[in-house]
Image 1 (cartoon, helix red, strand yellow):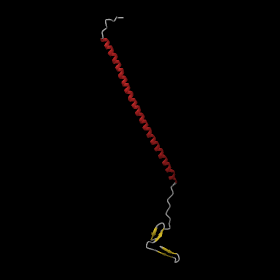
Image 2 (cartoon, one colour):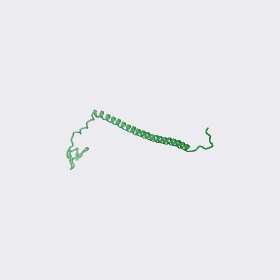
Image 3 (cartoon, one colour):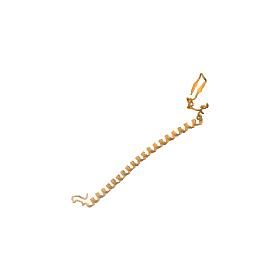
Length: 123
């Protein structure tokens, strides 16, 4: 479209009139402005940070509890391993005691079977 200021005329072409916002159209754009977005309500500005803070608190507690459970499980495992070793040591000590008793019995039995040498006196 061309505008002739001297003759007060407007010449149209086949594309219509061109506007900066909408381009070349055959009809005029509306004079109404677009409706601005509604502002965020106050309760959203209050509730959203509270929800985010609570989420971080629960996430921290969850991971902390998970770490504590893992540490507790490791300590229980180490205690169980120590107890297993203690049981093995107790069994070994019982075997040693049984071997000592058996040794004493065998020494007594051998002594009873051994005859008294003739060179020994009764004193």
